[in-house]
Length: 290
Image 1 (cartoon, rainbow, N blue to C red):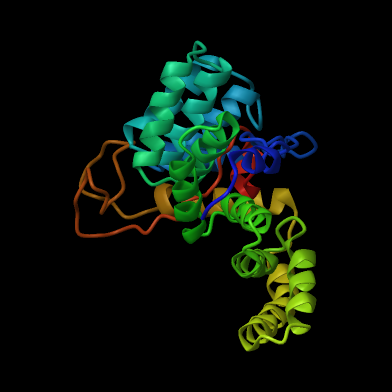
Image 2: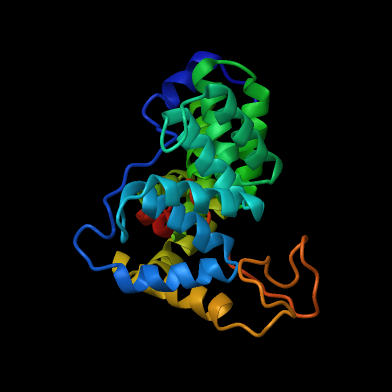
């Protein structure tokens, strides 16, 4: 894909690599949910560990405590959690909990990228595009993250396609994003459907029909995922507690051992842990992404 670098810079000028979200525990009592998450972390959930690290860093659901934030971050990293690599990169870059260091921030960002963590792909791509360096690498990272379903990468890539007049590729990305009701993707999807319906090209009309089909799917899927932040938070804490605190024994009496089936702790029972896809700096971002 050939593009002028200045177009890339203009397109991403309004995008931020760090999300800003309201504190999910600001107007709700998160104490019970955080207790469940704490138990899950004690019994080996790296996902719970990183949530605790962020919670203690921000004072979300627990009293702010830098020492505990460091401890839980180190535990999550010990479990080789890619999300922990990414959050620590952000902390190092911003001087949160740990001393500010661009070099260490890049080190942890590289670790997250090597672990195939899509939000880290997105951050590196945006940084490259803003600095107008390694553009080919940035585009490859965005495309790889988009294939994995990372919405921020898909949306930015769609905009870049639009800037380069590659409208079919842009439309296909907006089509998939519309199902998730991501930003203004539904509106853009409808606009492309109308545009291609007026084309004399058979391929364009076929694409328009596909866009309309996804447009009708949007209402069904979006309604099914609606819920309050607190409901989502409680559901997460219950799932983590059930998966780790109440799980069957793995043959050791020690807490905080890796779950069965992980690459550092083999055993007969495999736990299929769900992973969150968020470059999070607050607990809320772990629930809803960037």
